[in-house]
Image (cartoon, rainbow over all chains, first blue to last red; front, top):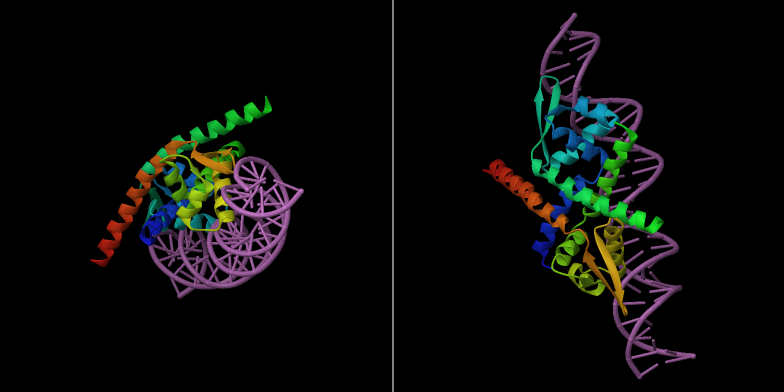
Length: 106
Length: 106
DNA sequence: TTATTACTTGGCTATATTGGCAAGCATTGT
DNA sequence: ACAATGCTTGCCAATATAGCCAAGTAATAA
């Protein structure tokens, strides 16, 4: 494994990692329906405003969302909508798990 | 946000999280070309065998790979090949980032 | 100018993740 | 039975992440 190739995988991993948190996935899901201010996302996930802000910074640094200050509010929107496609596959994984759990129980 | 909905996002997050590590992404990529024993994956990522084994456990618990002991070796293979589709989108994010970096520099 | 709103950042603690080493466990070979 | 191979697990230290509170910043309102 070359160094450059390893860096490629590290760059990819940073993006996947940014999506590896329930609150951040909720926000991405919500942003798929249009831009939202931080306060709206805060109400959605029900955490401290500072916590939500930091989660959004993670998504922003990963290049998944972008922000836009208008007046006293900051609006975030999905920059790369294709991340929504991930959910289809993720649901397939979860369906597999459910099937296996049933097989194990039955 | 309901509790059950939150659990859904937590389940999804666990899967994304499992893919949020360079070594694990390398292994997934390698497994996309067919099953591999732990020792082959170890050579690929260049880490301790125990480390590789633990990474594989993470992928297995997430439902992404499955294993199969044959003789003294354990072979892993991709259980949900659709995770490979993630890379297309991830590359789009990275291309975006590169474009912006260039814009910032120029 | 002062106050308010909306958000970000710093500082902190609690918890989780990573990775190596050493020890353990199967399986195969002698 | 004993050794060797391939892998997993337990333990531990280093590092990263998550979350809240408090303090700071920027835009608007009074």
